[in-house]
Length: 139
Image 1 (cartoon, rainbow, N blue to C red):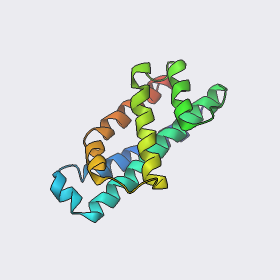
Image 2 (cartoon, rainbow, N blue to C red):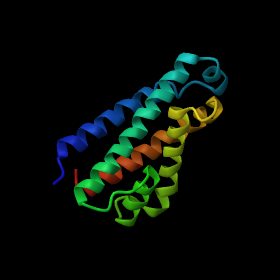
Image 3 (spheres, rainbow, N blue to C red):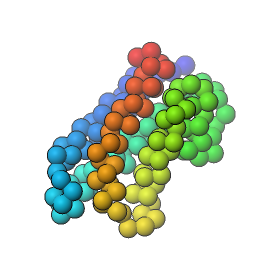
Image 4 (cartoon, rainbow, N blue to C red):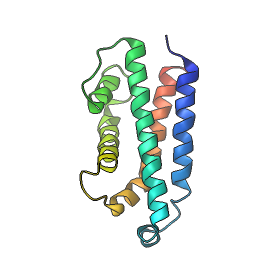
């Protein structure tokens, strides 16, 4: 059985990370590229927010006793298969996870132009994800 306080707590943590990201969104690209502190705030808070989304997916899957996926991307597919999220949004959410993986594991040097682009639209995608989770649990 879902523990609503855990879901709500995770959503609050994600919203706090998004709020920190949004404090840097008024910067133009040049300002952002020349502000290492802003870059750090945005990257760290995206990592935290996206990890929170992954944690929510894992929580839902375990709570519903669905088969545990082998990867974070498969967790998104599972949510789409069970109508927690829209199938049309699944690729967007998988892209978020790939972005998180790039920043966490530093597979390559971080492209701060890409981070800036994600900063412009990524919070809306994460908000939509949280809205879907809240709707699923009727919160």
